[in-house]
Length: 339
Ligand code: UFG
Image 1 (tube, rainbow, N blue to C red):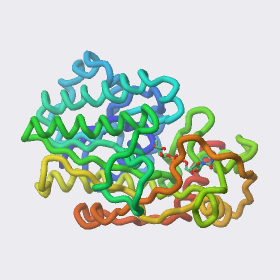
Image 2 (image 1 turned 45 degrees about the vertical axis):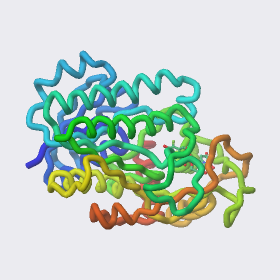
Image 3 (image 1 turned 90 degrees about the vertical axis):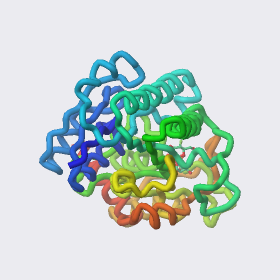
């Protein structure tokens, strides 16, 4: 049974990925310093899988702290590195916090992979690296755009760092996964996203508005050049994202890599407008959402959705969940959180 180290295992995508890994027969250990997450999420993982996950409460950006647990990280076959800060606005206000945490942690975990001879590495990247794209759907060969935030820059730099690392270390391999907009929760509602403060992202803002935690949702602009004037994104179910990580690791373990570093888009391929996302939420949950149209949000790209054919063809990935299921499960999780 292959053993995988998941960093950020108590986080949103990390916890869902642990569930998928266990369902596919992997053994998992986690490192999470709980700075933006809660250990209780692993209770949810246990309810779903029956497995107790060991979590090392270590700050990955602290070299010494990570080295102090090297002795506990024996026989690991692969690392999935989620642990990072991800709030775009916060990164603009506190750029050094983002560079120190996201880049420092990445360098330290790569050093660990070298010191401990862990050959396989999966890195969480984002479609944000494409910036304002010229051609839709966007494929992996599209050039990187200007990073519009320090957060986005940490993803661009992260990809470059991982690339350089595997180039210089021929016995290491890596897959970079570029997420579009991960939303939803495990269908059991035992795990889901735990937003901190006022959510910046659309779906948690929708569910909190429906719950009455927020008064109303503001739709940021309805005067874009799109079919209904609102921005278009590629929302993808977090369990589909999770499963792509399992498939990426299996791909490396099976010796299928054609080069030391490869990159895959993770989106459904469907562009969905903000108004369509709201309509799906209202329909599937039989609710009416309080919302208004507001001004555009600075830094928003008009439209972005994935060409996901590479992940489908090479990794054998399949998108299993549609927008309605994303919105249904997000609401079930919100109700659980608020109960
Ligand atoms: N939106 C609203 N109202 C809200 C929140 C969002 O209308 O209250 C709209 C946004 O304008 C956008 C869409 O909903 O059109 C999605 O917004 P999110 O904030 O949920 O997601 P983004 O596409 O902005 O975020 C994604 C990734 C981030 C990445 C960012 C870069 O989730 O990791 O792109 O811009 F950093």
